[in-house]
Length: 210
Image 1 (cartoon, rainbow, N blue to C red):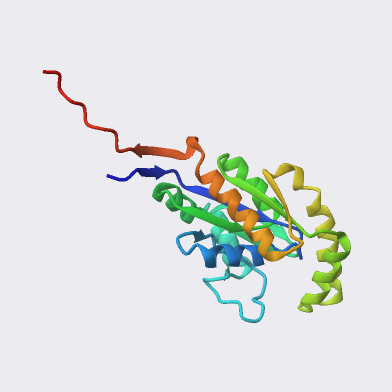
Image 2: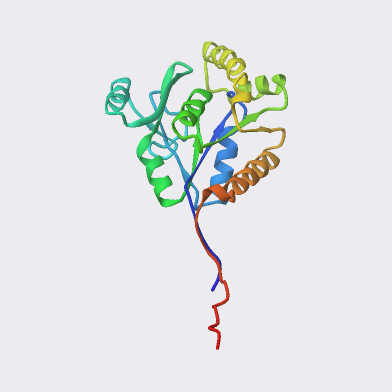
C-alpha cells in the first residue's frame, strides 16, 4: 500500500505591475502542470489579438459586469487601467472542495481583496529587475495608445508599492528561472502540514499477543 494524501485546495495569486511578466509565468506554469486550474477573469476591456473569450478572459460589457456584481458572483473585483476586472466565486469554491490548485493572474487590488476573503491564499508578487526594464517591456507590447501607455506606467509605479503586502517576491530577470521559483513556491505551499486533510500511511499490521 502506498502513502495516500488528501490536501486542501490551494489558491495561488500571481500579480505584478504591467510588464512584470505575471501572465507569461502563469502560462508556463499551467502548461507544465495540466492538473492545475486557471481562474478565468471577467473584464470589460476589449480583447487583444489572439485572446479567446472563455479561455483568456470572459469579455463582458459594463452592463453585464454590473449585473454579475449585483448577483454577488465575484469573489473580488476592481477598476484597473480604465476597465473592470473580477474573479468569479464559483471556480474558487469548486477548487477548494476538490483539493485542486487554482492559479490567478490578477492585479494587486484583486490579490489583496482575495486574501481578505481567503486567508489561506498564497500571494506571489512578480517584479522586473529594474524600472528601465519595465518601461522597455511596456513599449515592446505596442498594443496601446500613448495615453494608455502613460496610464499603465503611472499605475505600474503605484502597483509596485504593494509588494510588501504579498507573501513572496520573485524577480523576473529570466522567464524560465522566475517560473521555476514560482513553481517551487507552489510545491512547498502544497506540502504544508496545515493543508493536509488526510494521510494514509502503510503502517505494519498489529500482531496479536499469544
